[in-house]
Image 1 (cartoon, one colour):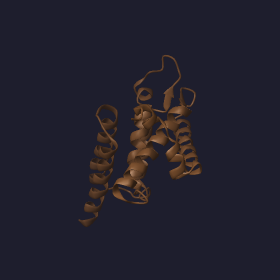
Image 2 (cartoon, rainbow, N blue to C red; image 1 turned 90 degrees about the vertical axis):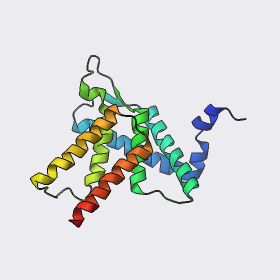
Image 3 (tube, one colour; image 1 turned 180 degrees about the vertical axis):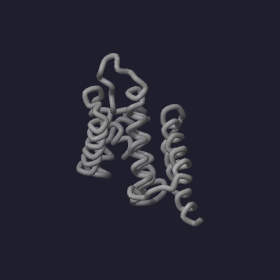
Image 4 (spheres, rainbow, N blue to C red; image 1 turned 120 degrees about the vertical axis):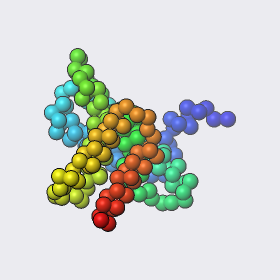
Length: 179
């Protein structure tokens, strides 16, 4: 019988399945997003990206994708699953690490959740950046975003739950266009 740690910590099969270039590319993309997020909020001197934790998040994401593809007999996963599973592993591994002593304000305490929230929010409004919402339409959207951020901070979640939340938003968006 295999040692359970070797099953979950040995990523050699992922390298052969996806290729080192694909994994490195995903890592570089997420690392760049983390850096842009920190720079946009001007907190780069207080928070750093832990390379090991980010790499574990990337490898765990690919591990889940591998299992999903095998289970569902598919070659690719949809973009909602990509966002949900990446988000889950970024939240789980917490690659953004506060470095400033005594700077544990609420925002920095939840910097990983804020980063994931910003990624999910950007995905949800993709293609609608120029859309101007009527005042009566803003409130439900802002309530959804507030609830999503609260959920990421204080509730238990898994990748499937995040996927369902994103799907729910997309379904509401389609339903709203019907009226």
